[in-house]
Length: 269
Image (cartoon, rainbow, N blue to C red; front, side, top):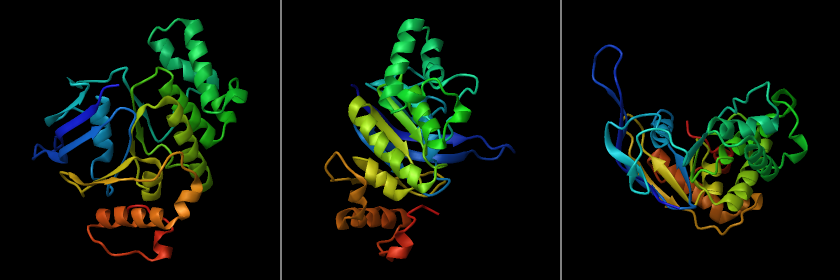
């Protein structure tokens, strides 16, 4: 698969009162290798979602480039799929119907679309719920459908914008483990935006730490050295805690250690 590349990406939003434009992202350079899982963290308002939307082709670059396989990204494309925080499923369609919907929009023959959708439903562990409707599903199950729908067209890059933020802590941990299982099976490249530092470290091959906005840049790219597959016991190891602390300190702009009770909820504020 080709490489995803951001070169000095700058994103501006025009001011409403004809004043100077607001610079959300100010010259971010980053690569995502084929099959790599890259987590992105940063303070609230630093442009994480704007960056993800630029890669999706939903927001234009004011300067710099976003490219995939050397081809500039100028709009949405089938090689990229987005998983948003809210599942936004069609309430009148079953699980299988929701997963097949994107394939139908791309004029994939109905029989093939249904077969591919069913394979994705099985992959995310919802085979027994294929005929159920969204209102019959828990929040975690709805996000599994959301993920299956994004994976059904077989994208090369999966863009995830805080997909587990609305879930309770226990469901969130379970969904993180499920995502790693699904990713290991598909080996799709992933760019994953989150506010949650432990989540970023647990999931990623690297954690990209953005500086505060406006005009956010990359403060540091932190390699994650832990072997795969990973399970939740990893979170309790000294190495994991130390790496999460390092990301936290980088994010805060200082190297101070946090007390254990302060680390209990490693969310940026």
